[in-house]
Length: 428
Image (tube, rainbow, N blue to C red; front, side, top):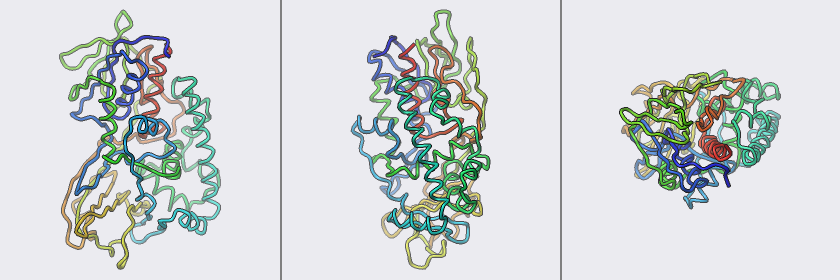
């Protein structure tokens, strides 16, 4: 299928992007020797599943949907079992003192409630998402036919118009009301992209597409099993706890990859971790068009206990499975409530700031028991409007999966970018 041969490939990063790249490289270059490096001691990157009381808590990437073609293609090809994330239909928006909106478990009723309260703003938002979905569908087609720098594909499909503008400016231009933005759209986007008031347009639109594109799923055994499965299926040599310090281009056009005291030469290299976080020295190579950007921390804390409905002003009814928040409830961006045995619940609170010990005051009738705390020091970029995306092809055989991240970050975009870079290598 491909015009070139490749004997040795290095993949820097063992997250979903790197493990997908290794998987696709094995598919398109059956004889290639793949080595995956990661400075951490586990496979998974920003995907992390923690099992508590028989419940999978997704502390990183939470779900994917029926519109995520690349990811779904892998899951189905590998026979991995998916489970619907039904909890996402049972949500409410909390302003710190009361619910400003609560869904119905029947999606049609939820839509009617939204229409009744926000009128044309809902329809205008759906029309905008329909346009963007069409452009994304065109992106899938274009990437298949003409794999190229992700910025070029965005320009060809018209998606570049969105990452150049602030998200809330895009919505206002379409006539979406401020009330709908504040009470529905902002709570959805700040769960994923925190409290960035100047959020880039495509990041915001992608988060809405993720929620409003049909059924959502996670893997039955936890999302962490996906990168692990892909690394195994690729038959790659996985070197955990080995940070790549330097990549040097040789006189023969190959690449020397240095990790501590070791050095190995590869025909091709795929960088599958953000350059801002990788701290790699490049020798004989230039990073044209790449500008570093800040990353957002996300803090999560989980406790178990008998939930007190009065915390949300409820009497005897069950709380929603997911509670999103407006800016009035800062710094908390989301509560996730999952029932376990003995009438108890697991409650996960998310925030872009460190969570104090008293953040759970009033949540449980019995005070609750701490289950875990986790901090993502760099969960995702602080998305801002960007004029131009960095190059996917740093050098002839040196590719950069995270070139898409200044615009958007998700399991699907990482997986699609991995497929794209492998196809680009195949057409040198």
